[in-house]
Amino acid sequence: MASPTVAANAYAALSRMMETGGAEKGTQTSGGPSFGALLKDAVGSVMEAGKKSDSQTMAMASGKANVMDVVTAVAETDVAVSTLVSVRDRVIQSYEDIMKMPI
Image 1 (spheres, rainbow, N blue to C red):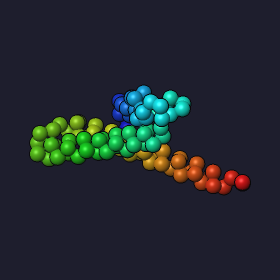
Image 2 (cartoon, rainbow, N blue to C red; image 1 turned 60 degrees about the vertical axis):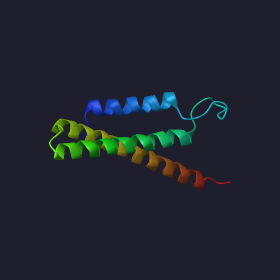
Image 3 (cartoon, rainbow, N blue to C red; image 1 turned 90 degrees about the vertical axis):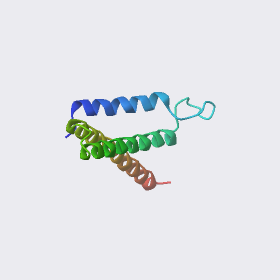
Image 4 (spheres, rainbow, N blue to C red; image 1 turned 180 degrees about the vertical axis):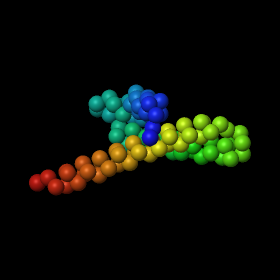
């Protein structure tokens, strides 16, 4: 189970992604980041969390890291992956709902 700190960090990371965005000015009519850019940032964030978790685990195995750091990194990765899977499932469900709409 994720701790409140891990959840707060995940929400803060999502907030930063929403603020910075990935779209160039002039390419969006709404002024916000494109969906593709948000998706790319989210996947990149999950990959970074996984790499951090792996490096903490390797450091722990060599005796250079604290157990708490490893547990925190693994929990952050778990939250990031769970969020990404939830978004994926929701996108697939939305696509299926659109395909069921009558023309």
